[in-house]
Image (cartoon, rainbow, N blue to C red; front, top):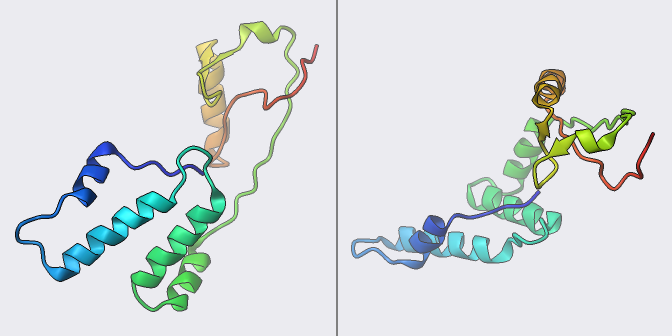
Length: 131
């Protein structure tokens, strides 16, 4: 996924505080470095993974932290289903094709159905038109 840092975050990690301790300075510089290695344009999974591993390592216990983190993760595979629509022009989505904007009832149904799976979205994902 894509990691984005707010403008406020960038301003905070760039500016040194007058009463900043050495430990706070190191932490601030590490956060600034973290923001530099993350690529917000492409959602680079490798840099995301390395960043998480670095955060876990610096958080204490090194590799043991990575192991504990991996133990907390539960894989929820994506299940994509194709639904035939008579006229695709009646289904409108937002710019990122993650939400149905019209007809609005369709998004409510998708929300209800995807709640059980904890995932869901709308979009044609480059699929050819179907009739």
